[in-house]
Image (cartoon, rainbow, N blue to C red):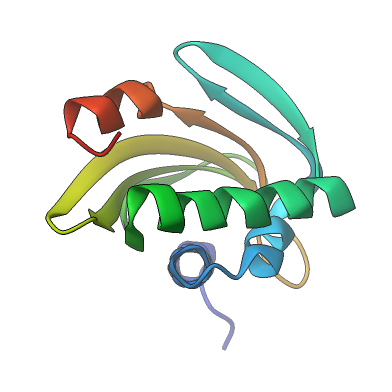
Length: 142
């Protein structure tokens, strides 16, 4: 018996959160389609997932750990909705944890456009509901 798409997507994002926490930027990069969009209140940016992108992910993770004290990321899937065959909108709440002598966290709502692919789902785009930098400033992270 095969797994339901919602179960597969939940497992995919659980693995994605573990990779984010561990700094496994290769696994993080592999979660995305070859070219994808990141959007938020202040910008829309296309990314090509290539060697340069992977180096940028590595540098971002190092900066988060060294400058901001990043310790972990957790994800809570709020909803999964199929809106076209094999395509899903996934709403998720990310909690990013930091410790620079005092533990703090920031939470972000992100909506993902996910395509069920073989052998696993792939992220085509995401939209952050908040300006993540402003939220982290508000929460005393930066």
